[in-house]
Every structure is written in C-alpha cells, then in structure tokens.
Length: 188
Image (cartoon, rainbow, N blue to C red; front, side, top):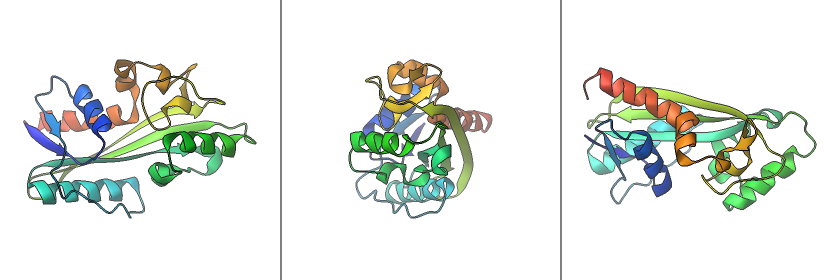
C-alpha cells in the first residue's frame, strides 16, 4: 500500500520508510503542487493542514507529521516554530545553545504529531510521539538532522546514534509505530 507522506524533506521520508520497513506500506513524496500553509496554533493543526494539502494534490491517502523541540527553560520554545527558529541548521543550534547559557535546567523533548487522512480527505487517525532528553552544552555527532547534535539521551546526542538506534526511540518513530499499529488493526 502506498501513502503520500506530506513533506518536501527527502531525509524525513527516508527515515519513516526505514521505520516502516516490513509493514507492507511504502510512503512516497507528494506530487508537484504540494505547498501547505503551516499557520496552525498546535502541532495537531499543522499536521492536519499538511495532510490535507498532500491529499488535495494526490487524491491518495496522506500522512503528515508536525514536530518540534520543546525546551522547558524556554517555556516550550522553539516548539511549533522549530523549523523557523533561525536560518540554517547550524544557526538554530547556535541560537538554542546561546539562549540556554544562563539556565541549569536543560530538560527538553521532541514532539511529533501525525495525522492520517483517507483518499477522501477524512481523518482516520492521529498519533503523538515524544522523546525526552536534554540539551547538551556543545554539539556532538554527525548523524541525523535538525537539533539532533545537541539533543542528549543519556550520555549521547541523537547525532551520535546510528539511524537504527535513533529510529527505535525517536518522537517520529513513536508516533509512526502507533500509526502503523492502527493501520494493521484496520487491515489497511
């Protein structure tokens, strides 16, 4: 079964296909014309808007995620605005490290909300995944993307982990495994 995954990020698509390996489901990129407006006030709203746009341009079942990094000492920021927190990935990392300099509380979590729509655009299922950790004092590792080089789980950042290790514990993996369980229970 093929499901359109509402993203323009090929790395994210590769990651979810790796997690879904062996499920009988292949996620594909949306066709040309996919251009959602992410102006929702929650991860749930943005996830729905992306799935709706992918469904609109493809006429196929669509799955979307919206995710972000929520840092306790920053009142949950960057949260919903993680992708637009700064210019480049390195600038995002530099900004979060600078903003956390005066704080001893470095607790953080990645949050991912996924919304699945059928071919008619109706919501079938919504799942949420979290991965708790803390922000390191300096970046480490070469794997992953986004805030992975500063997101510590135990004594390693997500960027220090292999893709297989990360795909067993990440917020996206947790949300997707719930979604795959739903699809399996429905015989889809």
